[in-house]
Amino acid sequence: MKYKHLFFDLDHTLWDFDANAKIALTEMYSFFNLASLQVAPFESFYQHYLHHNQILWDRYHNGFITSEELKWKRMWRTLLEFKIGDEKLAKEISEKFLEILPIQKGVFPHTFEILYYLTEKNYQLHLITNGFERVQWSKLNNSGLNKYFGHVITSEASNSLKPKKEIFDFALQKTGALVSNSIMLGDNLDADILGAINFGMDSVFVNHLKVATELKPTFTITHLKELENIF
Image 1: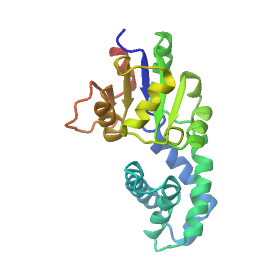
Image 2 (image 1 turned 60 degrees about the vertical axis):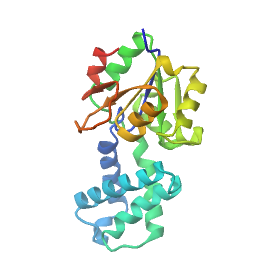
Image 3 (image 1 turned 45 degrees about the vertical axis):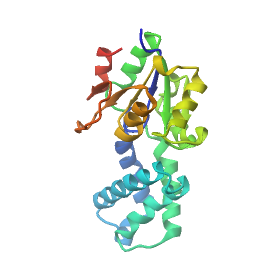
Image 4 (image 1 turned 30 degrees about the vertical axis):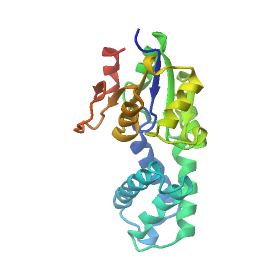
């Protein structure tokens, strides 16, 4: 078979970040009684959080802010939408959120089925994730995904971020894989797909949201079950 090493992204590809984040934010919202601070309704708080989280992740990916700034400033900027400029509260909310989020277990349809299928076909499965080391391992252990992956390469451990070349170099060194027998599977067009293209690695665009793109991944799927048609 052409491919031996399959490098998966985690968040938004296998682990349903948005669904799990909504559950965690609901618990955190109640824990801090944010409604009493006029942070309401919850859905408004949630949508503002998603907006600022995406902006700050993009800034983090591009090296403009640190991981610590990302963690609390997404909460701070969300609170500012409700005229609350409380840095201490934002940091407390961030800490609580990062306790609750990784214990959630939601994954996309067919996740376990396809990982079992690929394992049975003797593919070597690994993860390359821009998430934080402790948080990502907690997600894997709590969801039961951990048993399928030989190596987990995080941005913290590699001291780099997708789409940078260095994190892919680190992944190959860690796993003993070659570009020629490896493929990247992920949902993020910049981090996963463009990162792989620029590195010279084949890619699978896991297009859960069915977005249009001018990039040319090696394969495109809209749900994980379709991987059976590729591997």
